[in-house]
Length: 252
Length: 375
Ligand SMILES: Nc1ncnc2c1ncn2[C@@H]1O[C@H](COP(=O)(O)OP(=O)(O)O)[C@@H](O)[C@H]1O
Ligand SMILES: [Mg+2]
Image 1 (tube, protein in one colour):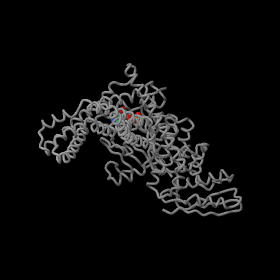
Image 2 (cartoon, protein in one colour; image 1 turned 90 degrees about the horizontal axis):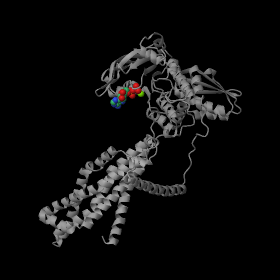
Image 3 (cartoon, rainbow over the protein chains, first blue to last red; image 1 turned 180 degrees about the horizontal axis):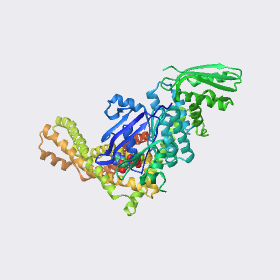
Image 4 (cartoon, rainbow over the protein chains, first blue to last red; image 1 turned 120 degrees about the vertical axis):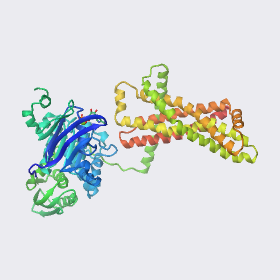
């Protein structure tokens, strides 16, 4: 399904701030269609904040976020809604709706945006839960499953509508190695067969090298990005000591 | 886009599913039930195969249909020949089946009958009463701990809570008690004027406000304003496991969270009630001056003659009791709150409703007791 790389998301001169508190400035990078794009950087450098900008939850201080050439923040409400339909987001803390069962959590977007029958929606929800290894937990409430399982349920909800772009905020934090490996396989497979673009915040080196083919590295001290590109290339060629330390666990 | 189409070709001991069109969620896919029925009706089917050469596109719609089929086949020892399916589909299906369903995790929904409902409600009522008693007992113990100087809580919290339950409540208490005094005086004035006894409006308003109305009105206001806030605050704390975190740090939730709130309301409610007394009497004065042609001075002198120290103390005592009721019920509902957002709403509702009910019951009981004691 993959064709020659076309830009899917373009970030231009993006500056992010909470009030007077500057988080990151002058971010410039491009995410191609079908990329598995990794957002890297130390804790608190603004990775989740960058994700909030990419999914349209927070307006940039300056700069633009373009989807296939269309600027999100300069579109009207109807266009923004159409763009948002192509996003699936998994939040760092899961953000499952606590008063609904896992099935209901996944069913809500399906009920809203498709014409499927209740029975079919239930089946789709079971499938999504099966893909993240949660078969049999359909009727559990979020508070009744473990933290790692909540994470995976959040991923299942993000995938509900087979979105064009999936955003995962630290999906493998709190997962056991086997579940984390299954998750990596799932991410690769979704990209391979459905052509989904993935934007993933993660610290897992194994995962970064196993799945990532593009990335950006944010630096909390200089408050800007150091570099962008394929993590393997960065490991081989990037001379910046911070990036090297990150990608080699401080060994070099 | 082309609609998804499905044709089934039975062969000796196998079924061939021929898929065509686009199998997307957006455009709708055939339900799995129909296909399952065909599987079931065909006798001795050992194998299913697929032909997807005419299929134009797919997403979870196809996978959903396949997973239902695969589940049936796995439990009935039917072989699945997936060679006719796109590679991506096969791999995703393998991922979906990688982790077997957790045994025993499935929920069965039990049917409920009226009788079991009534039984459960009765048991619940007994349990809740028991819980309230235990909670109240524990809060009294923590109060004793405080008197011995051993309770652990944050002084700064206490001041913030006192400020919120005290000064911040003045505007609404002023408004409501002023109007209650005004209404009492107005209703009384019309009747008393008939007998030429207009001056006794001062007795009516003074005694009613100081003995009962000020305490009840502030109680109800604080139940809606502060009791609800306590339930919502502690409720969302327990949803986020913050209360568990306090407990593992060695703090007692009772001393750390409930005690300051109870203290704040025990101290502030009587003060608010005194204030409400004054505002109510002032409201009565406005009516007395405007309708009954009394002077301000005449009215206030009559009030001081009518209201005894006993009336005043009864009101103060009641408001302190109401303060404890509001704080304990608010905190109890918050701490016992379930683990989801809906539960916080229910805890808040239940805190306000049961606090108001308890206030009314308590005031009736106390009135009878004082009457018997002749106070
Ligand atoms: N709502 C907020 N208001 C103000 N500052 C915030 C807010 N959310 C996050 N921050 C600050 O922004 C910085 C980046 O946060 P975040 O994007 O969550 O980091 P991370 O890279 O670990 O995901 C942190 O220093 C944090 O203190
Ligand atoms: Mg983060």
